[in-house]
Length: 108
Image (cartoon, rainbow, N blue to C red; front, side, top):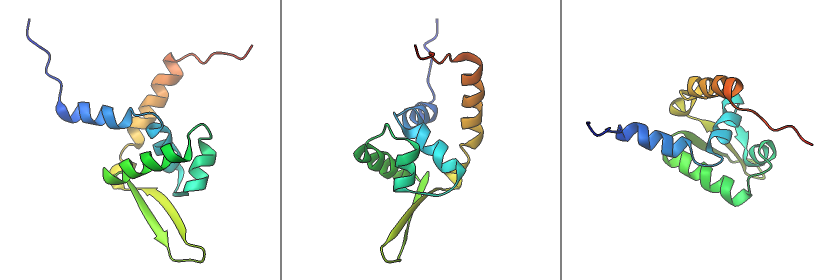
């Protein structure tokens, strides 16, 4: 039997998007550009330290753009780049799959 060869690009994509909190951050930013505090409020379970780390990783991958507005006080917004916005159909497919197959436990 032939060994299965995993596509390195696919493996890297799943590794990136599959990191804890990354998908939720992308989901929030698909709505519109957001400030750090708005993202944190939308995902209250993530610590500020972890959110900052994930945003920095996504920025390094060219998925998120960090824009600093020279207001007083300084205002920083995060937005998806074209590369990040291209994840919209992937996220929708994941929503569709989850709605069909993932059961959410009901509170007791």
